[in-house]
Image (cartoon, rainbow, N blue to C red; front, side, top):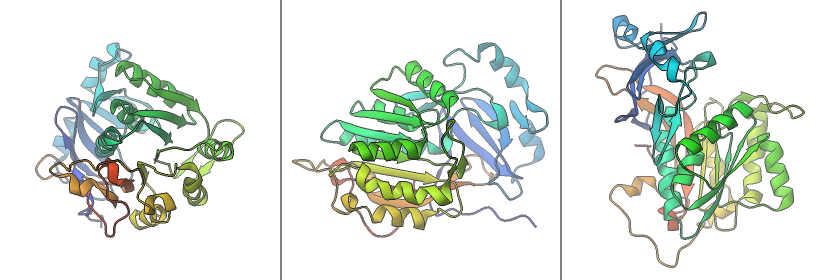
Length: 335
């Protein structure tokens, strides 16, 4: 019997008009609409039966099969312009990520991170001074570009994949954003070097994989072994008055409770972080975006009858001057 899809107490809408909509999930696949193109591709987290009929899934313009690769009518349309900026893209808050059908069913972006990108841009923009930000496991640059779009951050973008780094730089160029330091490096190697050098950051972002291979000469990343060490380095890596921290994971052993507990032990966060001479006025709806938040990231289907999709866990903190309340009790939803 297939497992039921989760309700997801930390769920958020899987719909961003003109950019991204989740349609359905199940049978270890996801059906979504990205920039007007319907995509049917693998998703190992979807261990239940799809809610919508097979005929609905078959209408996708792009379909990935592990044995035959990509196919579909949209592939023929996108192929001639695949290297043209804007041919197919995911629109973020103040930037865009260039997409293309890639090996393994990947497309060059993680749409489930959109709510976090919106949060990062808002938090960085509210800071009373320009921030130094570190983005680890930065992939194609969504979080990096969200900070750059705030016009109030100097971001160091670190990823061990040269291909991902090249894609991120192309996304920044297409979005007309700068103020970014690009580094191809192993995350732990960079962090340990930064701590030795006394480098400090006002904001840290990390979206580590369960497993990853670093550049030649560095050891593999294993989340069970290495994430506790990385989180332990944050006390030395963060400035005395940080603005924000964002951790997201996709591993069952590092869920909401573990991430929340890890952030709650960092002294700078418990002290309240970055302060302003006068606190910013709250905006409607901001109360759910303040302090220490954690939850399960679950995309809700935008099409009637579609199944929700869990996409890991998150914990994020912002200081009072950036709209946060410091470390607070209880979980919250990502809406």
